[in-house]
Structure formats: structure tokens, C-alpha cells
Length: 402
Length: 111
Image (cartoon, rainbow over the protein chains, first blue to last red):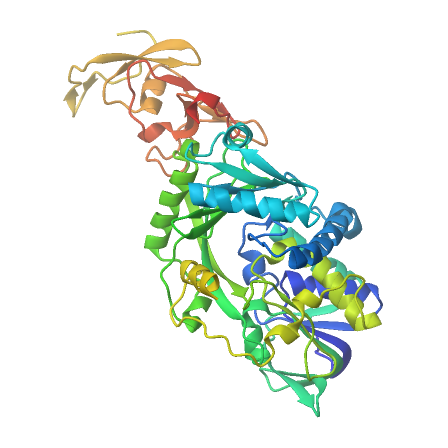
């Protein structure tokens, strides 16, 4: 095994999508980068998602944040367009658009309102589709659909290829990734970061440390309260090409996300009803039989035409939620040279741009596009009164109340 | 008894095959006789048809392998729905069975 050096310029903690993307961008700037990962590349949520690139997700109705998020989305789109060429790596990226479908009257009203506000805030590509248009586009959907929102620059990507593409290219640029090397703590003295201490007791000194551990970030940076949230997904057998789009939909308060088929023909669907559980149990990555049964029942309800397809595999993974559902990207308060990129509940859509932004922040001290809405200061040393037992539904109610 | 019929009507140990109702199924448009309660794959075999599908990548033919619904080597398009395991699906009168190429194709009316 490769010897871990005693000191370096930059340490990235976590070899998920964000960690690898950051390492890749920094290694392009000729920085000496070490990445430490507890398990393996893309072992956490980066390898446990549907690969949907749904940008500007959620039903954001604040024109100010929409405007700022749009700039990030546009930059992300620009990078994604040429990423396959840049990384020289097959990513299975398909720009086919995404849907947010309404399955009842109330939802439909909500979507119509959201689209109106987002259009006014400057999103040119967002579209409202009537029931007829949705069913024409996606005839497998249930006839109970009311309508949908459509963004054409979204799509799907293979999450493993994307993460490994970044990791491979980072290593080509002489960054080094140490897997199965958990970090115990981030060492800082007098408000200056000094390096990290590994679980083995080894200390590595470095000028800059970047925490890219998403759902696990509060173990290293406890001052920012980022909540882990477990989600379940199922994979079907490979089937013939179907008109299916990555989408968001709410059913009885539960979110369901489905993506188009992978290249081999499997459909991935996820985000189903799970039992509310305590915070530490959200790191559990096993799946209970009742969750698979529930998932297939919901799957059948959303797609009337796909009831004959068999589910062959399932998984659960842990994503992260912050106090306002936006990620935490930037300089860590009160500690020099410590950066954080965590709190992603939809990281697949933002991986490429976040790597670039953090690299800019580390190398030049500022980003090319404003990221103040993602500032970690929002939650620094702020206790959030999370519900003790929670799942997606409980959190949705929690956010509606706040 | 037809020329290509491979059914064992008189088995040395199991005895005579009981009389069953005849149904007709269509394999790629060709009318075949089957018996009620038979699995699709069994009916096709009895009529001398062994190549049930073609693989996606190398276009090789596949037939019955496990015959208990595990291996998915016998999947065919039945009534416009692809990926039906014919070795565990009983025949119905007038059923349309088509050999499947790769992942097959969906008939739009089923959506």
C-alpha cells in the first residue's frame, strides 16, 4: 500500500462526488492534493442515488434565491456539456429534461405558482405542461396526473462514472486518494487549520482542509448542524426503451424520484416511504422487506404501464439536509483555511460546479459567481430543533411549519 | 398425434397423459395447439420450437435453461409485454407469443 505522507498542501476529506470533483479541480491548479475516504470511492450517497440531474429542485418561491441558484445552475450546465470530453470518460449523460408532476389539485396549483415565480425570476427554460402534454411525453404515467413542470436542460448521468471520472482524472494530475482511511478529527490551533488526524493516530499536516463528507460532516465539523436522511431506492430488471424522465412527485406526502433508464435498461426509482427513525439510525444502509414492498406499490401507482416490470435490487443511502434545504458551500467560520462542501440533498446535479467553486475559493480566495446563499455562516453554531424521529414526510412537515 | 408433437402420451412409469382441453396459441403469428394448464415454453417445445429469444449483444439464440422461472433465459414477448418468463406462465386461448430480440419492445396500447 502507498505510504501516506506527513504533510501536503491540501487535504480533502471524503471521496464522494464532491470530494473527487474538488480534488480534480484543485489538481488542475497544480496543487498537491490528498483525499482521505472512510470506505471507498462513491460508497455513500454518491453511489446510492438515481443519477438524476434535477437542477433547481424543490419548489423554491423566493425570487432572490432563485436568481442566485440559477447562476450556479447555468455554470453547472456549461461544465456538464463538455465534461465527457474534458474528463475523457464515458458518463452516460443524457440531457432529456426533468419533470415535477402533480398528482392532485393542490399540487397542481403549487406547481403553477412556482413556475410563474421562477419564470419571473429569470428561468427561461422552465415550462408548464398540461395533462395532455405530459401524457403524450410520458405515456407510462398514471392518468391521475394533473400536469407538470418541465426543465429541458436537466437529465440523467451515471453517478459512478461521474465520481470515478473525477477521481481518475484527479489521480492523473497527481492527486492521491487514500481509501479505507477514516479521518478522526480536523486539527486546528488558534483558529488556524493544521491538518487532520487519521483513525490510526497518524497526523498529516496541511495548509488547507476541505470537509466534503456531506451526511457525515457534523462528526468533523459539529458547529454546523447537518442532518442525515436515509432514502430507499429500487432497481428494476432491464427493459426495452421507455419514455421515462427523471422526476419529482409527491404521493401522500412522500417524495418519489425516478430516473430514466440506465444504459443497460434498468429503471431506478427511489425516495419512498420509510419509517421515521432517530438520527443515528439514518446511517443504516440495509433495506427492510416492507420498504421494498411499499416501493413497488408506489411505483405501480405512478406508472400504470409498468406494473409488469420486476424489481431485482434495492439499496438505501444517506443524504443530507440543512436548515433551509440549500447546501453549505464555502469557508468555515472562525477557522482559517477550513472549507466545507456538505448538506447536499441533490448533489448529483451540482457536483461539477461545486468542485470548481471550492477550487476557486481555495486558490483565488473568491468565487466567479456569488455563493452567499450557500454560506456556512447561516447555520454556524445555530441549534436547529429537528424532530427526534423523522423521515422525509416528517421533515417536509417540519419545513412547512418553520 | 401430430408429426412434431414431442409430448409423451404414454409414459412407462407415469402412465397415460390425461385428456385435456385444447387451446390455440400464436407463435410469431403461427397457430399452434397447446393443452390447458401447460406452460408456454412447454407448449412451444412440444411443437418443436426451441429458440425462444435472441440475446441483446451477440444475438445468440436461447431456449429453456432452468425451467423454473429463475434464469430468465426463456423470456418472450407475450401479448405485447416483453420479458415474460414463458416457463412459468400458463397458456391461454388465443395468446400471442413472440420471440424477443434483446430487451424487446413494448406495444403502446399496454400503457
